[in-house]
Amino acid sequence: MAKVSSQDLGTEPIGKLLIKQAVPAAIGILVMSLNILVDTIFVGNWIGSTAIAAINVVLPVSFFIAALGMAIGVGGSSIISRALGADNKLKALKTFGNQLSLTFLFTITFAVFGVYFVDTLIPAFGGKGNIFEPAKIYYEIILYGVPVLGFVMLGNNVIRAEGKPKFAMYAMLIPSVGNLVLDYVFINVLDYGMAGAAWATTGSYIVAFLFIFWYFLSVNSELKINLSHFGFNKAIVSEIGSLGFVTLARQAVVSVTFLLVNNALYDFGGETSVTTYAIIGRLSMFALFPVFGITQGFIPIAGFNFGAKKYNRVKEVIYTAIKYATILGTLVFIGLMFFPEVITKWFTTDVHVIRETPSNMRWTFAAVPILALQLIGAAYFQAVGKALPALLLTLTRQAIFFIPLMYILPLYLGEFGIWLSFPIADLLSTLVTAYFLYREVNLNLNSKTTV
Image 1 (cartoon, rainbow, N blue to C red):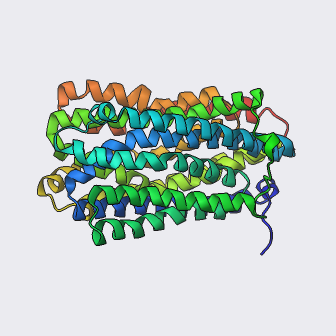
Image 2: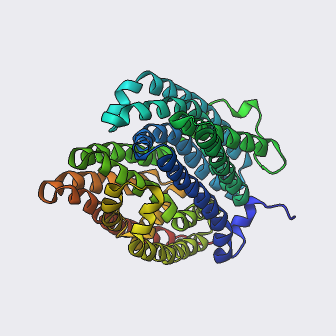
C-alpha cells in the first residue's frame, strides 16, 4: 500500500480529497454515535429509564474534562497542519510535544477536582431525586478514565492533521466496539448495573489510548518527537491556547447548556422531560454524523493549503464542503421529521417518554438543513489560525442565542419555549456565520495571490 503523506493535502483534487478525508471521519463518528445510541439503549432496557437520565447528568462534567484534550488537540493540530503545509517540520514536532505536556497537566488536575466536588456537581447538573445515586456511581468511575480520553482526543486530532484519516477512524472505531462488548459483559452478563456501564466506557478509553500510543511509535506517523520537544515553548503554547480555547469554550458551553436545560426541564416536566432531552442529545451526533464528517475532513485541508498559501484551493474546499454537508444535512432532516416515534421506541418502553419525545425531537432538529454553513464557517477560522472570529462564531449558536432564548421563550410558551429555542438559535447563528465567511472570502482570500 502506498505511503500516505501530508503533502497530499496540497496536491490532490479538492472533491476527491474531501471525500477521502471526510468518509473515514464520518464512519468514525457514525460508529462512535452508534456506540452512544446502543449504549443508551442497553442502559435503558437493562437498567431503566432513570439510568439514561443519570448518564445525561454526568455528561457535562466528563465532556468538559475530556474537552481539554480535544481543545489542545484541535488548537495544536491547526498549527501542525499549517506548519506541514509551510514545510516547517520542527515547529510541527515542538507543537505535538507541547500538546502532550499540556494534556497531562490539565486533565489530571481537573479530574482530581471533579472527584473532590462530586456531591456538589451532580445536583448542580440536574442529578436530583431518584437520579442522584445512579449518577454518582457512574460519575466517579467515569472520571478515572477521562484523563485517558483526553489523550485519545488529542491523538485523534493530530493523526488527522497529518493527513491520515483512516488511522483517525480506527482510533474512533476501536473504543466504540470495545464499549459495546464490555457493556454486554458488565451489564447483561455480570449484572453490575450503573457501575458496569461506567467501567465499560472507561475500559474502552484505555483500549483507544493503547492504539494511539502504538500509532505514534510506529512508522505510520511523521511526528517522531524526543524529550526536547516536551519543554514548553511560550509562542507555541500561546497559539495552542488561543486556538484551543475556541474548542474548549464550545465544549464548556455544551456542558453549561446541559446543566441549564436539564434543570429547566426538570422544573417543567420532571424526570420524563430530562430523559427526553437525554434521548435527543444522544441522537444528535448520530443524526448529524455525515455533516460532522465533512467538517472534520475539511479542517486539515483548509489549514494545510492556507499554510502553503494556496488560497484558491482554500476557497474551493469551503464551497465544496458546504455543498456536500448541506445535501447530507437535508437528507438527515427528512428522516428525523418522518420517523421520530420509531426512533424514540429504540431507547425506551416508558409510555410517558414515548408520548413526549417525538414532537420535541422535530423542533430540536428543525434547522438541520442550514446548519452545515454554520459548522463549516466556524471550523474554517479555527483551521487557518484566526482565533477571535472562530471563538465568536463558536459561541453564537448556544451561548449568545440559545441560552437567552431558553430563558425568555418559556415565560410565554412554557416548556415548549425551550424546545423552540433550538431551531431559532441555529437560524440566527447561521446568518451571523454566513456574513463573516462571505466577508473573509471576499476581503482576504480573493485579494491574495495564489500559488
